[in-house]
Length: 287
Image 1 (cartoon, rainbow, N blue to C red):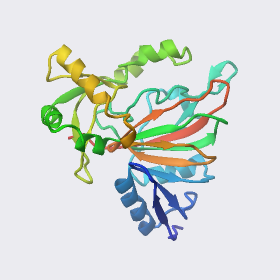
Image 2 (image 1 turned 30 degrees about the horizontal axis):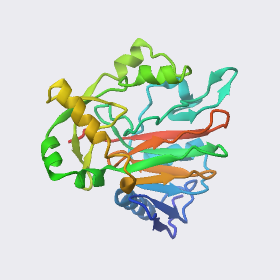
Image 3 (image 1 turned 135 degrees about the vertical axis):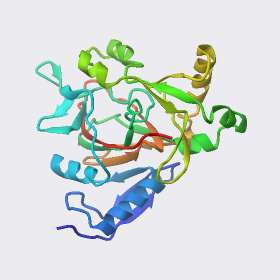
């Protein structure tokens, strides 16, 4: 039975993000509580739910309130019995990785390489390292709004190619555990063309929508001009005035809006174990 509760939304002293207090995600949300969370997600872009001792079933059920779930192309790293759940981990068992250990090495928005990229991602901490492991989030609405006017005028209306394979070979060289893709997996992540500046379908706010991880070129420009422009745009995303740094605590669940933020995994020492479970909610076609 769904229950309502007294929920507090406490904004961080940061360019984005808020903590949700007074909510147990193991209990189905009332319509009223869901509406509060939905509104807070749009307002703050990243929501942090502390001390959520929930099962994979409960994680998936909460995620599905926001829309259909997307299945990551690396099916090798699904949680057994839960194809919607991607394991993000540097742990190896019997000499093999149990999850994607280098997820988030470059700034990106999840699944921007799909025709319908992710609305949002929900990452739940299972095992955390004693040091490191932070996740950084950049408010790409503010990045767009504070770009120089001449640059905004230059890029609005341009289109860019996104592909999952953009830096895959480079990541494999850094991390020999990253698997080779089958022909079927490669076919699943064919390049797509997205707007350089997208409009949030629920709020109408514009955001910069190119990333150093998945964006390969601006299709409307010559190759050298495209490369120079992308390099320039990428320099704005990590600026401190746009970034919230999340320091994980045990059993945190973090829910971010991929239409409003990009994120980066800061990494942790290889010998320290880290494991999290991620679901990804499907969004709509960017415009």
